[in-house]
Length: 136
Length: 254
Ligand SMILES: NC(=O)c1ccc[n+]([C@@H]2O[C@H](COP(=O)([O-])OP(=O)(O)OC[C@H]3O[C@@H](n4cnc5c(N)ncnc54)[C@H](OP(=O)(O)O)[C@@H]3O)[C@@H](O)[C@H]2O)c1
Ligand code: FES
Image (cartoon, rainbow over all chains, first blue to last red; front, side):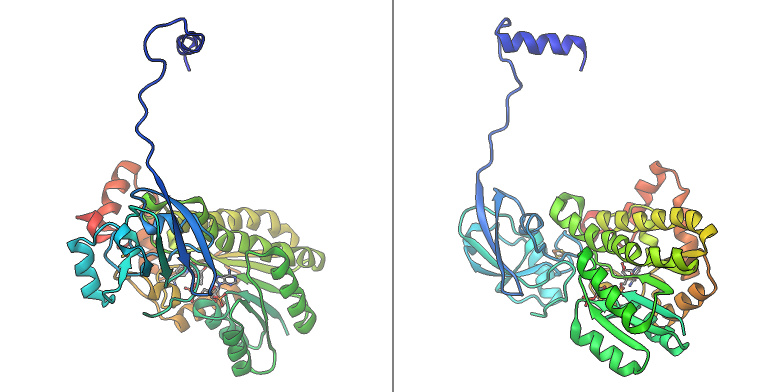
């Protein structure tokens, strides 16, 4: 930081300068708890920011979802949506095409393409990073 | 009879390398987490094969498993630290927990395995440390950041150890496979160029290890390509690899 920067900050801190002291912050996104059921029977909960994908949310928990492409092309990240399907972003044409191409059942979603929009989402992971995959 | 201990020996490259060593008259100790598969392999090989279950990320668990195998088979002459995991994931989905999970198996798994057997090798003034890196360790591959990084770690660690340990009678061999048929690659959602069959890979690896090579690199086509790519300047690498790498997701490449 330049000495000028420090001076400006100090002045702002001491209220010696008019105007706003800091840059406008983007509004904080709300967070929602998402529950992940794992193939070994365990469960964990992660707080996801609005719009976070299920892959990103699970990637901060103890058993990350196994992925192949994270762009909705391979179907590796398929999950069973147990609760709160309405609080996930709607599947787009690309996801629907992949699901049809690789044979993902209708009831499943691609976790890398599913953004969290509200509380009450609970999904069952089928493929865990570093573990044997479970066929649907 | 010499003793080889192999981690990640329940499937893929590790299981095939164990069988190949055993076929060549070595005693083999197999380590992985899946008890049923290890038991099956050891029973199929018969005398001179033993197994112990451990998670390689767990230092105590792995050390105990190695001690158990050494007490059953004799001191470890060759450690093949091969257990590894990885998946394709854009950096957009980067998280600490996910990345550390890969590091804990691919890096810490090698560290714990070496730490358990190296003192004995140094005392005896003989032995071989080896680990499975990957061509993905030559440069950061798109969509495979944590995996590429974990394999770069293995490559650099072994290169450095090789120089330190040579005067003490301990050889160090780094294995850099291209694509090999295994459970790991069965999940790859892209066409894998120059794919090698598991048995063939095991034969190449064991031959290289027995020759005391510093590196076992295969298939040659992939190695030439990746060694060349290592010297390509960043401005060119970044543009070309994003289009040409099979690991780049289709949608992002478009
Ligand atoms: N196949 C390729 O194209 C390729 C290319 C370059 C490098 N490699 C490397 O080769 C090595 C072997 O992979 P592979 O292709 O043979 O795949 P694989 O069939 O999936 O084998 C991986 C092995 O590692 C074991 N493992 C995984 N996590 C473990 C843990 N936490 N603790 C103990 N063991 C663990 C697995 O056994 P359990 O699940 O029973 O524990 C399995 O035996 C890996 O390091 C991989 O990165 C593979
Ligand atoms: S990771 Fe490939 S579809 Fe989600």
